[in-house]
Length: 64
Image (tube, rainbow, N blue to C red; front, side, top):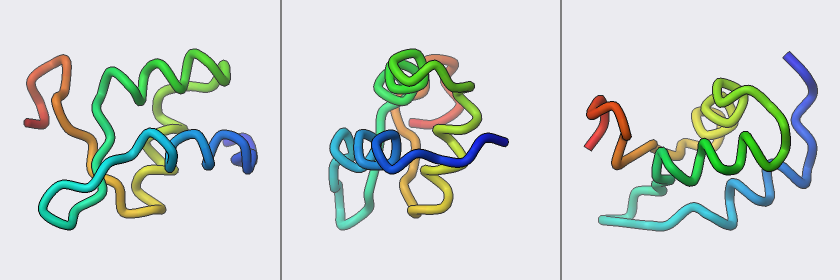
């Protein structure tokens, strides 16, 4: 896996919102960030895991 750039991490954190004191990022935003930075969606997911950010509103219906 490529080293996470600070710019990528900052964009993920910028797009994250709090709900019930839990950091969340929508699936659509996660995919858009991956496309914007030309990285695999899995890399965005890994960063979210490292920063305790939950993915929500999954386009496949996996996460609510």
